[in-house]
Image (cartoon, chains in turn brown, blue):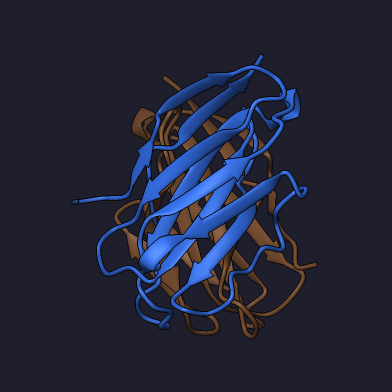
Length: 112
Length: 116
């Protein structure tokens, strides 16, 4: 079945350092979304990417969707302690049921 | 309501008992999803309802798990003869009808199930 892998699984950074998580799908996606889950919380939507090669920015966060629409990345510039949490990508298949296939997640810890 | 509501928030049950978990999606959202998240792990897809279409049950781990969605709104996830490995947080999410521009999933707070 379709799989969506994320690397790294864990990342510890010093506050102020940059952070990147990568998302890779075994199949082509119609779109990809990113979610953030704070410790003890539930996933919260961050952004959606639809077009091949699309790049979107939200303040210190930069999201990219690969040209082949099978991979994506989230880059955080100058991390802050408020960035702590687990970041998940979620893809929609291009056919069949439109359930979200969530990536394995990257847990980010930011050391002050 | 303003968001996705799940009940109960916590449930402790004895091994072998049946449990029912409830999800009230955002009004008007035709798509409803159930996921399971074990401690420190990712989101495991369980089942997906979309409008009047047959649900996608491909993620249900065994025949002890079933789900219904009545009237296109409230959903109930039932686990029969619970086992300790069923212990996890069960998350429900809803979204509007699929469209490239509008498929954000809104999650509930989850039900933490502990089987003792």
